Amino acid sequence: MAESTAQDGNGLSDRLVLEPMATVERGEMIDVILVTAAYIAAQMLADIASLKIVLFAGMSMDAGTLIYPITFTLRDLVHKVTGRRGARVIIIAAALINLFMAGLFWFVSQLPYDPAAAPQPDWNAVLSPVWRIVTASIIAEVLAELVDTEAYHLWVTKITRRFQWMRVLVSNSISIPLDSLIFCWAAFGGVYPTSVVWSIFQANVLLKGAVTVVSLPTIYFVRKEHDS
Image 1 (tube, rainbow, N blue to C red):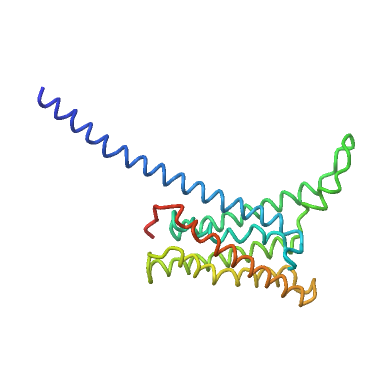
Image 2 (cartoon, rainbow, N blue to C red):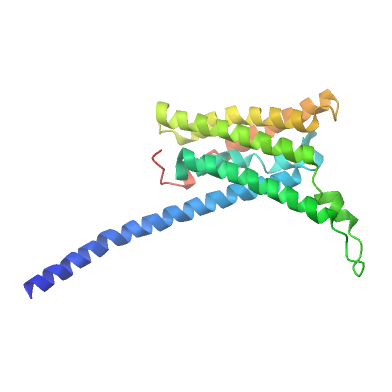
């Protein structure tokens, strides 16, 4: 009887230990899913919006710049919850998803419309991909955010894990100008006058920098940090 009670007690003790651990693991998994989904969604929306050049606050820019800047801070959140290797995988996965999306839009734009339905020229005009912009965007995203990953990793491993807002500010201050430089000249160099390309570049850097500053507190939304 005493032995049975001891076994029951041990079982209860095990459950009390394991259940909180399972809860933590579920919480961490939810964090990973949410920040990864937000990162990929922002990448996709930015690539679609980039097909249009707009005037915003008196500055010329691709419309993707209105949402794309948040991806840098979201990448830092991804890095925080998954580590450097996880961040790299998600960056490449997002690039492949964007490439597939552009390919799907192109394929659909080539299909003949159903004569029983009204013609849809606006669909092709808006969503048919401009491959130069798509290619420039994906290359810039991958290179800049891989650099961002290394800058973030060096900061937390060689300098300090404290002042989390600083790691976001430092890594983004390196990757944002690089991303803007690659994208603007690969997408618009030789298409628009040099002055317009530089204007788009400057607008990109200014807006992305402003969004970085505003989004700094979001790094604290995820409390648990990956060790690597």
